[in-house]
Image (cartoon, rainbow, N blue to C red; front, side, top):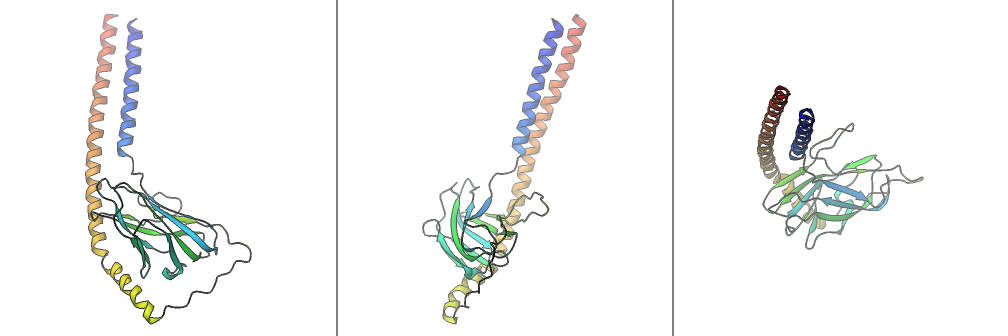
Amino acid sequence: MNRSRTGLQLRRLGIAAVGALVAVGVAAGPAAAHAGVTASDPRALAENVTLSFTSEAESDTAGISELRVVLPKGIAPDALTLKDAPKEWKLTATADGYTIGGPALATGTDAEYSVTVRQLPDEDSLAFKTLETYGDGKISRWIEVPTDGEKVDNPAPVLKLKAAAPGAKVIAPSPSPTPSSAAPSTQPSAQPSAQPSAPVASASARATSEEDAGGSGTAAVVGVIAAVLLLAAAGTVWWVRRNRGQA
């Protein structure tokens, strides 16, 4: 009878330990938010392709107000047009891509928009490095491009391309804009290239401090659970010895 009770207690303690370990894994798990891209025709050299982007909201205090995208090699800023976006959002070309934004979205609302590209380049994959700016000034950087299948913390949206259709060729680039039409586009591009450096740096520092704080909180949780498991183990040893003495 005593041995039966001891076995039951050990099983209960084992279940509790497994539950505690699962809780630790959940607490230390990475954020699920990310930025992604899909295409209406994901083939190299495909023409008039609609690219749809989604940036998942990850702030509990503010909504997304602007996205800055660096275009991959082979897609010029003047080779795409805005197709669909949140109300009052506008797209502005920059030297290396574009910005799209407007009134901040409601907190917790994903930023979704689409553009039409004249032609996709002859590549295996395309990475669209993205900076997300929130209404409170927070910046999320989805700019890391994984290599050799490795995992990264802040992956850029990557579009995998299939082989080009038989006979597909590179179409001639569009004519350069006239001086009168070039002036409005060069001014916005100069500002994003110069201004984001300071806020991006501060956002990076903020992100580092937040990660340190999160790491400290996780360490505290792990410490508490470890102490509980040690106490449980000590209690098990005491229970087994007590029942053996009685037997």
